[in-house]
Length: 369
Image (cartoon, rainbow, N blue to C red; front, side, top):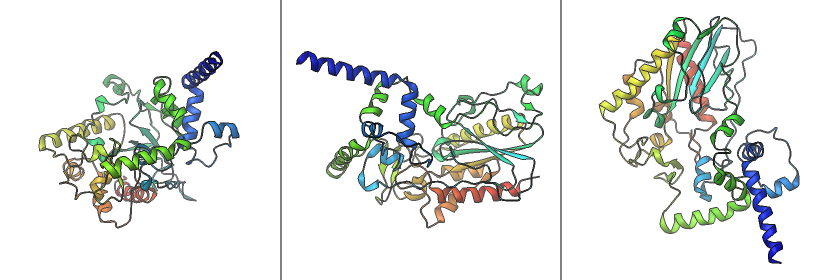
């Protein structure tokens, strides 16, 4: 009997190990667990697959809920709307590029801006480029940042591949054939998922298979509730807002973090940030962009939890000091009485995005020539 039990355990262990090393399977599992609630076209799976690999609640209710498992913040996320081109819109011969982060990743924005034929998004979190612009178009660029990411931005330390000075002089950064996408193409959601962890971290893959499922959610919530109610402890990545109405990304409130909205910012530190933005702007102008804009998305803590500690007003100070045309958002968000961020996620909700699209349209329209 012991031999049979041992053999059974060995077989199960080998199957789990092989599964954790199988990149296509892990990619599919990851997508089904974390993105199936976003895409209505997700294929139906067999009953055995659902039974053994139950879909996850980790991101369905927000990334902060997924890290904390606090049941009082188990709030299902709303779907973002798409922005298709308006009927009858005339060609403008302009293309808008956005180099940004998770706030705009995977959003359908190709028809969001009235003065542009296409919108091309490049995710700063992943390697891309060098950007090859279409010489038959007028190319514009928005540099978009979450407020917390301004602190460490330095184009030379990103994964963006840049043209050399000689390549720019020789015009290699241009193409004379119309294009509708980035060169090379921006990584798809599947490619980004594959590049993050798979086949590089078996322990995380095994955790994905064994413990990240709906069957384990209730147990995680009970443990999280006990820790919070008895010891006032939450997951280290998460903080509860002062009014208890939402979860916040801890690095945006913890003053030990450089990304904290409550960590004092000296003038030299501010000058360094502005200087790095200028270096990036000058490079993008050199490779052929007609104009470069700056858009900074406020931290939820900067809008909804300023009573926690004195806010450092980094966003406003950068916008006032930079020479870049700015798409202002902080005061608009601050004065709006509606909720513009998910309460269980570190990102804005569809209403917040819609306000950004509207304000961006105003700034872009007034700067086109």
